[in-house]
Length: 95
Image (cartoon, rainbow, N blue to C red; front, side, top):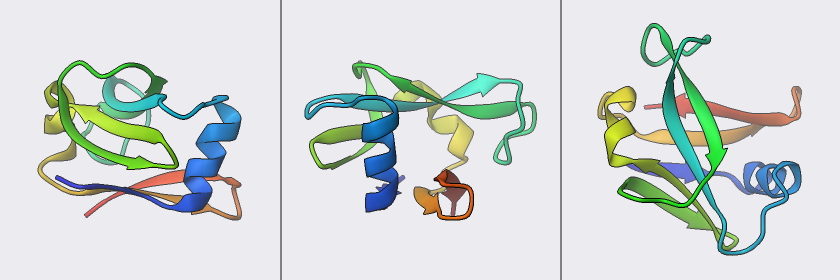
């Protein structure tokens, strides 16, 4: 599984979450919400230190990752984050 994130999304996370170089952002499966990948679950985002990384990418000194225990949520698909200009926020895609 690969994670990709575009530059505008990275900058959005840095600004919105007041990130500094060396910080980490975790994407995780959470029960409930309006997710499009697994019925009954949605994707959570948290500034958190990794413990058992299953997939990761690093950009501008920020680590974006998914823990091994949450890989099931992505159903063996790659995960990408792109900036939606109209909504002015990142959006998630799996392929």
